[in-house]
Length: 286
Ligand SMILES: NC(=O)C1=CN([C@@H]2O[C@H](COP(=O)(O)OP(=O)(O)OC[C@H]3O[C@@H](n4cnc5c(N)ncnc54)[C@H](O)[C@@H]3O)[C@@H](O)[C@H]2O)C=CC1
Image (tube, rainbow, N blue to C red; front, side, top):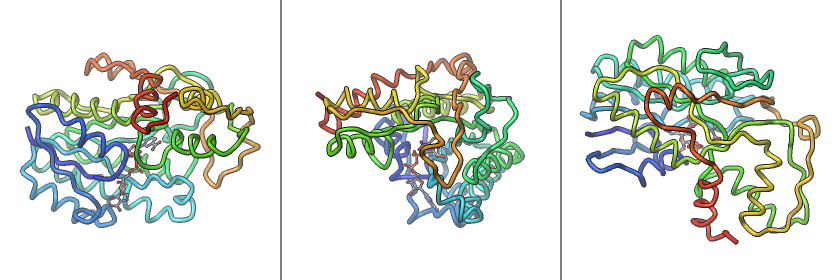
C-alpha cells in the first residue's frame, strides 16, 4: 500500500516517516514540493502520486499568528485540504486529515463528542473548522481526526518549552484552568496508519477524536515533565486570565475518543508513557 503524505518536518509528519508499518510505502511532500499556500499545486500532487491513500499532516499551526493573518492561514488550513479532498474524491482515494480541539468553544467540563456543535473561539480554530467543512463537502471518503496538545521530541511543543525553561528557572507560572490531553505525535501517526489501511480496505471515514489519556491541566502536565526530566523547577498554578495571548484558548479541551476506539480499535494512548519516550529520546530522562 502506497501513501502520499503532505508534510515532512512537522511533529506528526516526522513520526509518520519513522513509524511506517511493514507493507506500506510513503512519499512525504515538504513545502518545497507542495506548498499549501497553493491549493491547485496540492491537487496536482495528489493526481501525480498514484497513491492508495492521502494523509494531510501539514497545517498552519501558529495559533497566535493566525489572529493577524487569518486569510493566509485559511488558505493553508482550509483551501488546500479542500483541494486535496476534491482530488481524492475524483480519484476514489481515502483522504485522512488532522484537525483540532480548537474547533470547539471550550465551554463546560464534559468531553466533546465528534458530532457536538463547533464554535471556534480563535482564527486558527475557524480556519481548521473551515477545512473540516470543505472536506466533508468534497464527497471524498475522508477521515478527520481531531487531536489536542501534540507533543514529540521534535519541533516546537510544550514539552520542549518546559524543558528549556525548567533548566534555567527555579519556578514557572503555568495555567491550571485549561484541561485537555497531551497526545504523542507517535500515537497519532500509528492511528493514521491504522485508519488508512482500514479505509483502503473499504471502511468508511467520518469525524473522529483521538487524544492521549488521562485529561490533565497544563500546570499538572508541566509538573509531570519536570519530574520526568529530574528538574527541580517548581510550577505555580495561574489562571488563564494571568497569561494573556493574542488567540483565546478553550478552557475545556477534553475529547471523547470512544468512537475511534470502537470503529478502528485504537484506544487513547497513555501520554505518560509517551512523555517517557520523548524524554528518553531527548536524553533528559532522570
Ligand atoms: N501542535 C498541536 O498541539 C496540535 C496540532 N493539531 C493539528 O495536528 C496536525 C499536525 O500538527 P503538528 O505536526 O503538531 O504541526 P507542526 O507545526 O509540527 O507541523 C506543521 C507542518 O506543516 C507544514 N506547513 C506549514 N505551512 C505549510 C505550507 N504553506 N505548505 C506546506 N507545508 C506547510 C510545516 O512546515 C510543518 O512541517 C495539524 O493539522 C494541526 O493543526 C491539532 C491539535 C493540536
